[in-house]
Image (cartoon, rainbow, N blue to C red; front, side, top):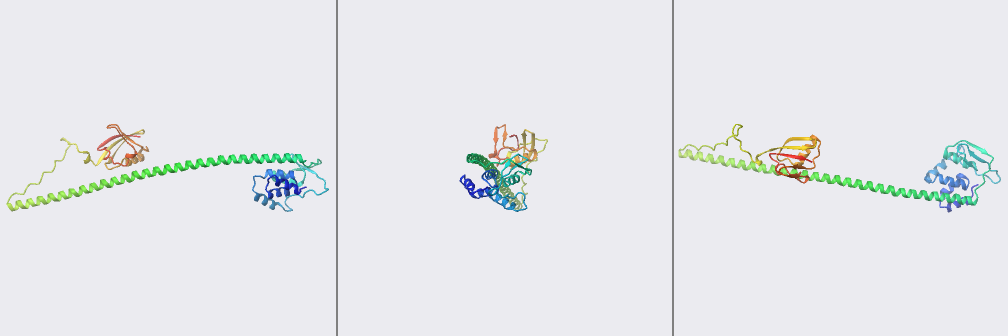
Length: 317
């Protein structure tokens, strides 16, 4: 029979008052209450209260049975599924609701209530189990916290590496764009200077013709055009500045690639074209003669600025 002393004992043990009251109410005694608290320690109180409220009706077979009255003989019940014995129907009903066992039999054996020594031993055992569980949960929390911190650090480093790589690529692209603009500006200025020189020469010839006409002389002959080179005669070598394209022989682990590029192409664009064609991601280029190594710092420079005109052989790494 549940008493207020059972409730006080549970509260003194450190159990929440509401849980202790609910345990005594559902099981009808200290022994059943301890077992109930042990089995439901991981469930939130709201769930236990809701479950209790939803099952307290007359038609529910698992509703709490009334406690034994004074003078009433105690008949023990035995679970035929697991062999566990119970002093009251309330304890048997609770066991059935928790375990799903439905086969119970009456027994002539009378289960004596726990003695004070047995109660103390049971309480000590329960305290040790709760302390061990809290310790295990605390250690697991530390492990989980460390794992989460390691994941966060790794994610932060990977994100930072990606940002730095993108910034480096953007800087290379910006440098290449500025160099192309500079080359285009120089070419435009050269074109303007050539046009001015041509106009000046045209005005000079016109003035000489007019003067010759006034003096009654034959007009001067225009300057002879430069001879066009042919394959049959000797061909003079052009300076590197006269070339508009350069031919590269790129040696990779997947084989050799030969391609022609405009002289204002940056080394970054050469690496991108090589990656698109062969799938090889270039990190640096090596020229054997003269010995030079072009790393990503040089990727923003043009082939002309790097002295790779009119042709060059590079080892790709």
